[in-house]
Length: 188
Image (cartoon, rainbow, N blue to C red; front, side, top):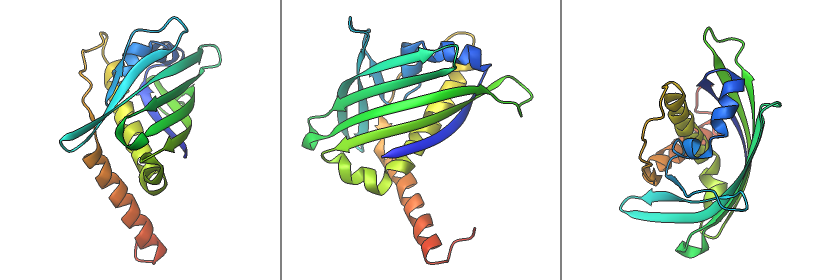
């Protein structure tokens, strides 16, 4: 599954890249993410909890992060698995930062390119609603990062599980909009 998007956060790009390099701080902004201390090999073990109503699935894995402060770019490579029906994910996220020229206050545009391989029970899901879910996750991360960056001290954000039912509505709305466009009933 290929995904491209962008969002904005407060601050100049040279400052934002340093904040992004603070992996534990950024993990607090990711819905459902829990991070363990960095391993000796430089990777970050952790988990992501996704809730489907009362049922919760925990994906366990690790991420490797790389940041180039001079180029204002970075990458995150992650792999994870869950016991439920052989669910597995591999993701590579590349990002580039640039100062927003059209903003009256210091603001950074974050451009994202992501490729994910989903297996097991997630394979069909990626084909039907993966992009809509990726947009919803990116929007939630962007909101949390903006809140985090707008404060001098990092607040203590408990990471709530990623609520699949809220994401389901995003997928359903995207599906119906696409269907209505296909049959010519949607407004452009």
